[in-house]
Image (tube, rainbow, N blue to C red; front, top):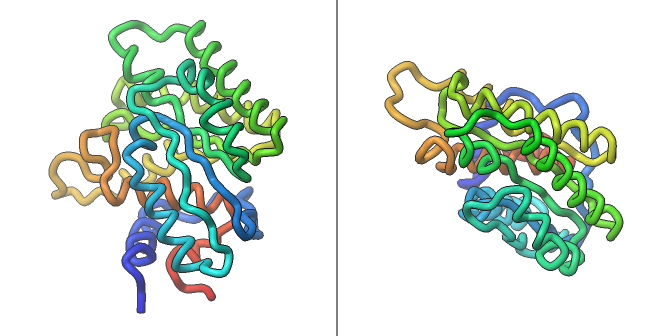
Length: 236
């Protein structure tokens, strides 16, 4: 019988299109591997983490993946994460860390013009976190910021690509996984029904509803080498 989570994933997979060609083809996570997810209020809300916990339990029961550690704190920016990265990530000695930060770095500063110095500091802080994790033998998945309002033309969404480009460069330089959630969300938004009112993949334009959390979960699970067939419950 199709589970609730794979039914949700199948629905969302139809909205976001196929996995990128550079997605790992083999499962990266091993039995007992701990994952820590660090971020802001989107992570703190925990919806995409709970999806992943359920998925691992249902689809990979033999791996006995521990419950994902939620290290999200609302309102934080990259400059806040770097201060607690040692304690909240490195000291916990996980096999994997996902780093999800950037929404507040842009959103909380929209009343002021874009500042290249702030972007440079953001890039420096994210790079430092990747270095700290990799030095400790922790595999890194960088997660791009998602959306600031469900309008591709919003000022926030015009600025986010600069931060996403910085993360892409870090991932390329340091050879870690990168998930372009922003692009996935923009692709999903193109499928929004013409008669749908208000927000469709978020609750308030930033924080996720069930569909939004599923997009995030799928992005990370793909980066861990889970196939779309497995995500939709179609593969053994």
